[in-house]
Length: 341
Image (cartoon, rainbow, N blue to C red; front, top):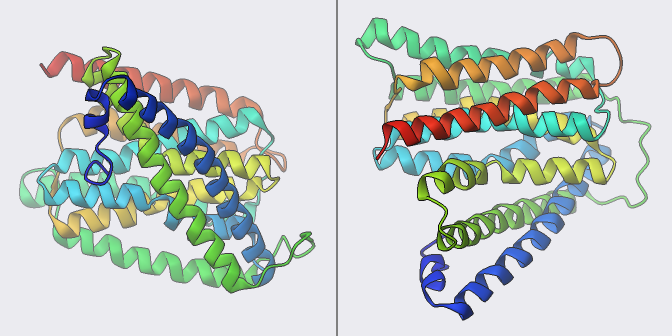
């Protein structure tokens, strides 16, 4: 994005440049909101037209769109030899999606449970988290060092194809939203077009927002390490967050749940798989004592929330997840500050 919009040059241009950066922040927030609205409305209309669950659409089509920033950033980082960043982006996004976004969603509203989907896609989500850890441990036995090899990357992409195929099969077996009536009935092609436009606006607006905010933060004297540990890491999960808020605002919370589950699965199968296929990903030691344990902790809590009684998730589940996410961000920052100059 820096090649298209010279954020750093604008920050150095004095008051006019700062004013323009602030204007870009305001505009990007507006377009982010509107793009997320179009994405969610298109997904709800598509579910209605095809006679499938909104949660399934969220777990497949919507999550494919919202994880595109993670995929692009991680593959590029892998090709450039920044394996820790590539894998960290994928694992960090799982922690952000499940800890921050699901946690925030629980606090804001009562999120619905669809056990047919949660006991299928939800177990795949949990299994994907275990799989990436097992791969790293097996690599130590086979290669003598923790690494996600290219062969493992291809294997993950094969599993991705299988996941998409079985999702389509499950969607034909389950139709809890058949009684849903929408005020406007769009054709499937128009639904897909609106979703494509919406996710494109969300992704581009998120990049503009993060780029502009980053430069203003640096201009205000905030250390670069703080900026990179917060804004940049948070940026790739911004599409999921805005989609979640739009889902709640427009009365389609099922899309929020589906998007979180689907995004977690795709961060392992698609983001990590594509990155490892492009270039083998060595796993830094910190993943085994920080990132992987925190990822499994939030996935276990999410699984426990699914298994509790009731047709909705209790709002109390959001508090520990938000606490874990905030603690994780603080610990990550302190580790960077301690070990990096």
